[in-house]
Image 1 (tube, helix red, strand yellow):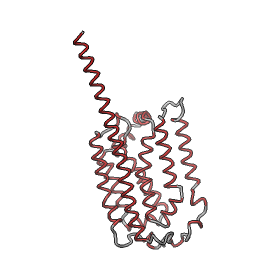
Image 2 (spheres, helix red, strand yellow):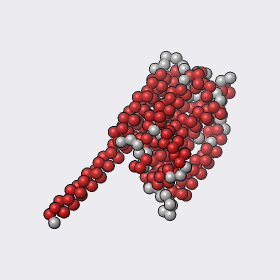
Image 3 (tube, one colour):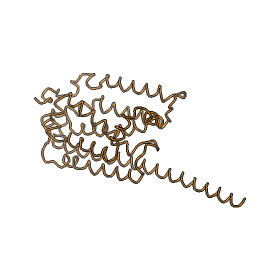
Length: 285
C-alpha cells in the first residue's frame, strides 16, 4: 500500500511533532552543547578556532533543516523536488561543514587510538573507494523500484539514509581533510577528485531531469501541494535542483582548495626567501 494514500491532503494537518521533530532538535542541540563544552571554551584541551565553531554550528543548523524541519515532511510525502533538496543538504552540505568544524588535534588524537578502527577508516577514505561507494549507493538509491521500496518502509529508509550520510563523510574526507599529516591527495589531485565526483553524479541527475514520465510511484499519487507543480514537472525540477546545488557546492569546495593551495605556495615562497637571505648573509660574513 502506498504510504501517500494515508498522507493528509494539507501540510497543516500534520502535528507539530511531525513537522518540527523536537526529538531531532534536542539531539542536535545536545551535540552542539557537547561540542562547545569540549572544544569551544578557552580552557578546552582541544580548542576550536572561531571559524571552526562557525562551520560546525552551520553544519548542525543545516542538519536540522534537512532532517527535523517541515522540509522533511514535504519531501517524504508530497514533493520529489523537496526530497532532492533535502538529499543535497544532507550529503553535500552538512558533511563538509562538520568535517571542517572539528579542531585539527581532534583527528590526530583519534588517529593514535584504536589501530583497527583507524585502518578501517583509512581504507574507507581511500579516494577511489570513497568516491565510488558513495556514487554507487546514491545511484542505486534512485533506481525506481529500490526508491519506492525504501520510501514505503520507515526502517529501510532510516538505514539507507544513515548509510548515505556516513559514506558522504568518507566521500568528502579525501578532499577536505583539514590535517596535513592525514592528507593523501595533492591540491591538483583534489581538483580532479571533485570534477570526477561531479561527472559521476551526472547520470543519476540526468535520468531524473530528462525523463518523460514519472519514475517513482511514491510521488505519482502524492497529494498535490501546488497546482503548478504536477508530479512530472516536480520530478524534473528535483533532478535540476540536485545538479544545480551540487555544482554550487563543488564550486565552493574548489574555491576552498585553490585558496589553501595559494596560501601554501605563498608560505613556501616565504620560507625559500628566508633561506636565500640566510645563505647570502652566511656567505658575506
